[in-house]
Image 1 (cartoon, rainbow, N blue to C red):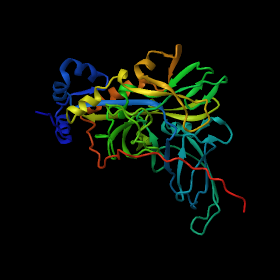
Image 2: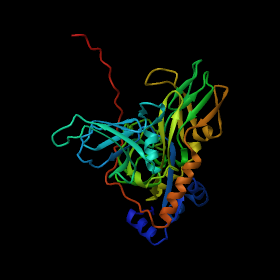
Image 3: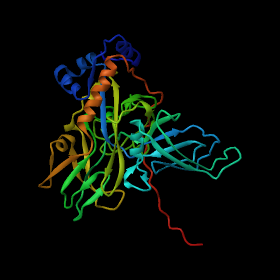
Image 4: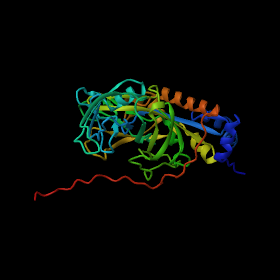
Length: 390
């Protein structure tokens, strides 16, 4: 007889303090000891996590109105441009935006983290002026406590899988995958493997719109499928994608976050990004879910992509498991190559355990998705047409 559990049943056990919560790494040994069926009976929730660079991150801010009021058209926060084409005093600041004066050394990611830390942010804004918004310029300081809303909204986080990067050229490459040494000098990768959220729920049965998550130290939510959502990609026999696949758009209250779990990063000669900590609980609804969450690094593969090729569809030099990547070296065509993780496994483990603790204490209940993600979504590419002069 197959085992079935519901969100309601699991949440009731959480409220009574009777639910069994384990991390995605801990569950592997439980399955080996008990088998799939007994492990499904025993475990109620598995926590997953990742902590890595996620460029598609930013924040919506509402400053409140000045007297007289202003309809902001150009906005700078600590000299970093913010997008003001929303309303009078609403802006969106993206993490990769660079300071007008400091360039790649300071940007949107730093502004967001300075806000979270309670620091004063210098606001400068200009306007053409209107009858209802007569002020034409303003200079002041803001903090997270002095403004109205401040929430993180990230259009593309938490890649389901991602390619490993290599460089076959004879020159050093500076990329969002870090520095790639010439002549296959290293391989970089940025996924937490068996702990990664959507690798433990490959067909998005429990991760969808409305899923409650850990986001940068606070409670957040999955708000939509992420941009570049590619669920219709190539998958193996266990439905694990061999490329980027699914992504998540996520949202949460910036005022409640901690810079322990969200940090700016500057990639040399590339630019600014943000390390974002995300933890997602996966309810064990049945034996199929238990099979999914018991996946190991040795069973999860990704492609080694040559970043020296200046085309969107870069060639793969082969596939490699996360167990091989985690070992610190990969043998590629007889050459032993050092591997370097961009994601922080230690910090991801910390997040998975914090989420586990929240659930065990009854402070965090599971939220069933209000809408599932599509399973056959394909990526479009930007076509570049030749436009004749008129």
